[in-house]
Image 1 (cartoon, rainbow, N blue to C red):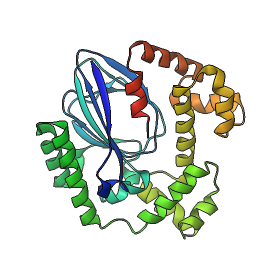
Image 2 (image 1 turned 120 degrees about the horizontal axis):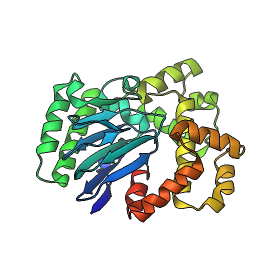
Image 3 (image 1 turned 90 degrees about the horizontal axis):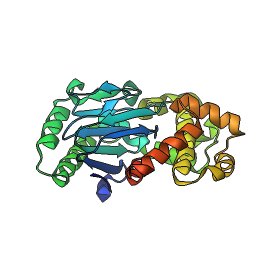
Length: 275
């Protein structure tokens, strides 16, 4: 058995948390490709942890995963109960209370963070009696964090920047800087400190995420339309970027999706990539 559930945050936290994703498995093994999504995550493993890229993560029961630009492979042969918190990219620094560029391309154990509060949150969430109780504890913690950090002075500006980036995937950096009311130099520094990557890296991830989500929901016959819609110049351009990020070709990825469908876990796979 495998189930996945998307839970929306409370109204007060919607500007910061995109959603919670809860995965539970029993008596089934998992092996999936997870695409980069441009979001900071918190992950709480209330049972066994995954192997990531064939490396055991045993012992890392709660972690903050910064932004990454490569697909990862997760696998598990044990029962899993995972709570993942998906944060809006622009809110990451305000929630963590630290520059998020130090978290990029890394999965940081809560035990390695300087704040004792994160260690206490880990214990409370892992010891909670239910998923609902765990998420309630997480929400209370985030609210307390926001009171401490008093938000980033750039949070609202960066929120508007991401709205523009979503509407115009090929928007120029000078236009984004103007949206944030900053010089280009200031904008790049503020963006990296608060988000964890530079704007071009995020634009690439956002475009690629949208394209691969369409692959999940469409058929190979619709590939040409998908390429055009997402601004790829031709098959060669898309194939090169896909291989660079995922390590396999789009054709091989589509074949892997068929294996996911046959295992009956496609709804779970789709729900994770619903950001």
